[in-house]
Image (cartoon, rainbow, N blue to C red; front, side, top):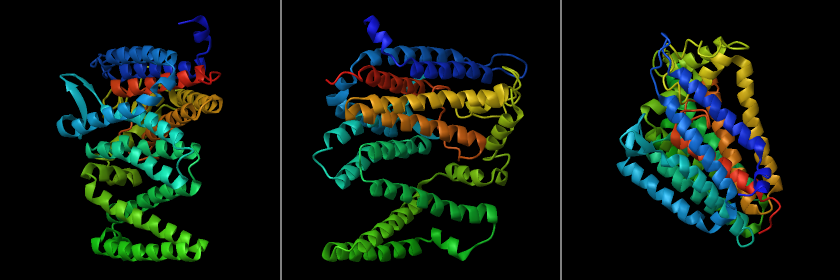
Length: 437
């Protein structure tokens, strides 16, 4: 390693990730202190090891030319897919999801690494198909690349982690020049699916009254009939567009397809989602529906954040964590503990550090000399931003509880290592911004 290599490192990105990891260690330690001041957990010690290992791994990857992974992406992708499939069959269960492989207390979560390998393989595909495929074909195959690992993660079931693949697909597809109408199609389907899934739950559990127009959204016969009618309309519209070349036929088919996919997906979600996952959606709409059950986490998290005030109660002075009011407080709700002890200003500091990571990745996208590097940085940006927005949002009660960790800060070796691998790849792209081969 030469001195000039060190000078080329993006120290702002590395610094932000390292400080966040240090904050995570501090507050994982805090989460393991009881109300009597006794340390009852050694999670912080393991997190130190994972953070240190991740830091070294990031530096090693930074020294490796990211282009060397170009012809290996398929093998990395297929290898992690095989691990995901094996996990679905033989993995062990933690918090309701068969998502882990390992022996004894040592384990890995392949789904965390699947995000990285999917980004790499999708970046390779989007680069290699730029001049050989039209936008529609690239969109369909990109969806296939992303939905396969996403589906395997859903089978575990790990609904939260599976959601991360969607913004990766959307952002990378957009940056790669896939037509905006295909990106918007996917966004519209996701948005309408959430509405169609949420309205019946709101009616049943919160409103308490039956509204006929909403009740039919859970009726299998209605959904089947509607899909068949809209399918016929779509077929006629496609024929009309191909025969008469009128644009309104295209948009009729487009709108009908959005509704078809949304109805089908929302119906499937009602059948597939577990009871606890449905309750997470319900208590997101109104935590007081089950304040001592499913709504407990959100209520206690909001209480912890609010009690921190402007400057916080002080390090190791929090009550919500030390009295064990917050389940999963070292993982899903690490930001709640952080905000209680360091307050609004501490929360702003975390926001600022993630903003630095985001801005540096945008800078890396702009400075990369080849599309492969651009797409890698875009996928990593989508992953980090989505994790941050959803995790912090759920601790504040403005997002449903999904079990997504706050990268760099939440307890967990797989999440820490995959996040640091992403940093290493981004550093590698940045360091070679002046090298064209």
